[in-house]
Length: 244
Length: 391
Image (cartoon, rainbow over all chains, first blue to last red; front, side, top):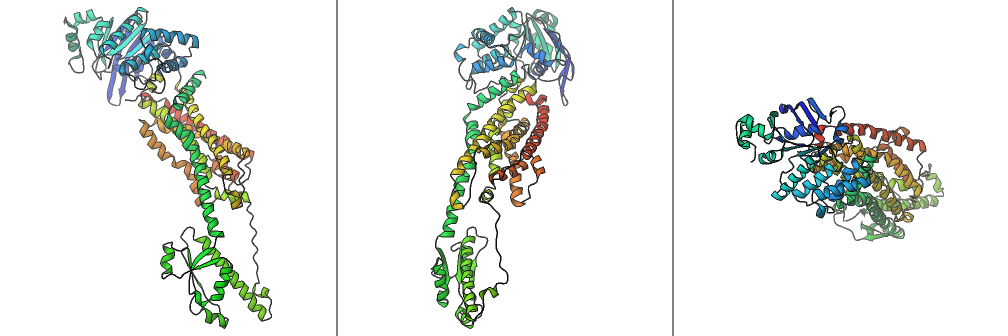
């Protein structure tokens, strides 16, 4: 369970996040939808405590991120905007490095790794150095690395960015599976079809503010548009930066 | 603790797989000094020996005016060369180290018993010309004293009457201390080995990670950043320490490859030297690790960090340069200043002196204290939001 209350963040004159409030519940997929530069990545970075909010509050399973950032990070699995694998290490070593940083015992680490390798279908690349990996292979490795500590809450920043159709479909199935396991899944995207297809709840962000926080059906009803795409355009006020 | 070790081991393992880092930290850095040292010393010594012991070839102008003088010089090892037209130009162009010119009236002055003049033409600014000039001067003086003594005896006087003061030179240098003089630039190679040993890691672990965007996922782990920093500093220190140990051992081996007996010098670079030198340089391992990391933390890319650290490399050279231009009397307080203490300490060790435990202790305490202060500043910079954001 992730709760965000009236979050603000400015970089100099630019108010990147200007009063964002929403909740992402366990057993649901929550989509953070918005055009490029809307403040999605900055919001997520404050969630996983990479950045400090100017004001507002982040609660993960009821823990205040400002008060105990390490406890919050322990409960989060994060795929940041920056995937950044270690090129001179194999996929396995990349995953095991993060597992050890979480202090996971060797036996448990092997079990978790095997489960993720199966679920993400990455057996063939496991013992290859990540230098020269395709975008899809990199995302798979980064996700496995982020989830090896079995977190209750999962944050994915534009997870399907740059992936081909097959990899995207695989990833969507993986996210539905996370939801079925009762986890709280929060992901950002600027792709409407994807959000509409996956999400139980959609939070639309534009210019650092939340302009809608509804189920897909309610969103259609609220805007009076039968088509989700038209609904989004109406909410955001322009077609700029959105992809179908 | 566990997390720090995890970071440390991952960084060490990853960088051992990088050929460029391994080459510069474990081969280039530690070996450049000793190899240069052996090559330069052997070349230099061979060159000097040839000039100081071989036959002295000097062009002589007007040899016919002083046949007795020339004969006497020949007996001392002079090999007169044919006269040259323009001796001034010849010494400036380094065609000759020194030219002897005997004026036409030499014989006339000699037979009258007046001082007879000879000219030595040389260029004091030419490197390597000093020894031949000195040898020729010594030969001429010996002839001068000998002939003077003979003239006094011929008049029934003791030759001692012409020497009211006799200067007896008592050189207090020992073979080791003379070796130390030749080793003056050697402490610098220790410092540079420590510096280069950790440099590529420092760049890679902060600026490199940032450029490759792996710092953000790393910081998303439930580990305090100062623990991650300590693990990384440990990895930098490990490479830098390895480089230092290799340097000390390589110099110890280089001591055996020196033409020591030809120089009349003794090089005692045994295990005692290795141990003391490593102990003395140890604070620099910590100091450079934090300093290099601090500088790399301000750089946005690998290349930028490399440039900054290139500039920073001038700092370890400073004490060596200062010491060679302004020879100062070593004092105990100097051990409290990082780099300066290492410079005079290692110089002393090379001269065969011992550095007292108190001085080594002072260097260790002050060096590590200084490193700790910079370490705290680095930890502060590591906490900044901007550090993790690569784009």
